[in-house]
Length: 374
Image 1 (cartoon, rainbow, N blue to C red):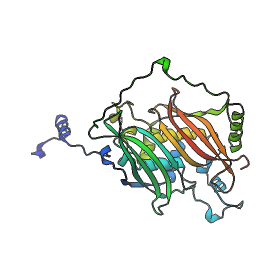
Image 2: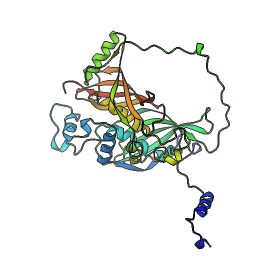
Image 3: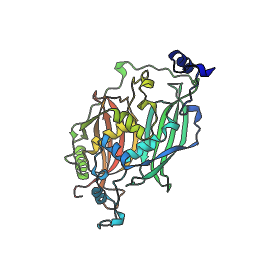
Image 4: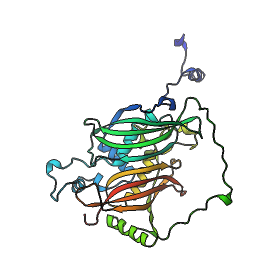
């Protein structure tokens, strides 16, 4: 009988869709248990193509990640002699932003493809510097905490610790902790605490900004150190904005996340997102972050990334939005993790904002910045 059906007839096909069960992707809140260890397949190979695609489109143009001679010159070594030919890399290293995005991208199908708000990420670390292209990235996550959302009973809140490894040596390349809201199969039965806003007269007054704002005079470590010293002496702050902006387009919104195996429909399925709060597909948070950091790094002599803390995404970034960056310098130190003493450590706060001057991302970053004489 089915042989006589014209399955592509509009009415017939509509009936078929109405009766067909959808084979769903992703996991719901009830699928996660504290202590659960998830091995994310398939992983991916960190390629030079992927690295250059990511760094070019997010304006991360540090020559270390583009030119082999600069890579060799900045490679850490314990004395002043140059590396031997055998020690010279064949290609520039993998950028930490691409590594982080690829590590998270590999987890999406198992952890967050169902949707839900990205509540934050912290304790981002890169134990290895100078990762060569061609490494096979293997990723696993451990469930650290699960709890019910009191404000949104249809969601739960899950925190994972994720690690990216070299698939051949098991060396840890990247680690972080992130927290997401995850849809539940059935809404939880919770009592939502009531509350009311304080009347305007009782609301806390907006604190006044410090004066003056100090801008570093250059891009070397000493410039950040001197600016911070000046600001402290004048009860001011080292705070400035970066000129460049990056408008979100098809490449940044859809191509970059898909190239990291990030399968979340939020980044590529316009139909599914049409009735969502954003009304459109949205930019992968790591693209927003990386573009903002690219703007910041263009005004500093970055040597290596050390750590990121308290990363948050404040509102949606959709196609056509432009991402800018604002930076505060929080702290400087002459201590570094490198043995060649060619850099100092700077702790920043970066705030990405859109063309409407709305914050879209914030986080604190610790980086080693080259000194003026290198």
